[in-house]
Image (cartoon, one colour):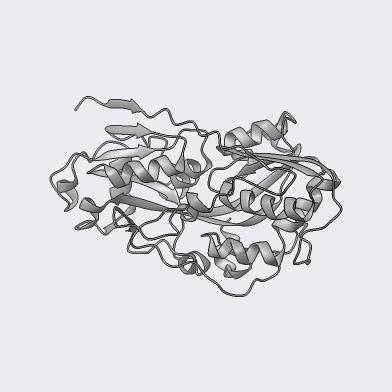
Length: 326
């Protein structure tokens, strides 16, 4: 079959400029979900992992002024946007601009000093030259899991895929769902662009580093919500998405097990589910005073507790093997 190159131009420019009254384009409405996602944990917050710059304060600092800007990971965007609204409310003299655009975009922006913070689902060295990555300071704020999602018509019969089956789908070897026990429908991949950290995590940990992730028929979008909507509305589709976008049940899509393991944070913590990474907030060298205050709030027990309810993971809950794997 001739490969179809259908590109959805959905370059996300999710810029939230917070007003002096504390208003924000918060992302609560962005989280949409799948029918089989495990409920987010509501366990009490725990301190940020050792080695981070996190404060143990449970409320944002006050009397902070100046400007703070961030761009990058769409997976981390909902959490950062909510934190920014809360930080702005406590500090009305702070000007904040929060945008998405993909991990690669965020890392390049912070490297070029056009933003104060570059948000990334992957380590900077995976997207930048080693010399450039060395200029950035890493602040790990939480974990992000990535799940395979399929349209509900596929999910009726395909509930688990092996690693080999996933590789065959995403390199175009397997072209029809009936080849692996599904409906007689062409497989269409809904993909993320190469700048996406979610794509990088998926390729590394679900596909074993396989570079081809286009399949035989592929759509592409830089917007996680657009990806979720497309998979939900289009028969025969498969994609991958951060768990932060799968926090509310939906009848139109479902997650699929990988090698018999569900994509849940419990399985990430116990080292049985492997498609996950840290969420990073990079600064160009050491942050200025106002940016450091915001980073401290991002890594506070209060924000970590909120992060868990929004579909992110707590690094302190990783067992020794899982922690060593990253």
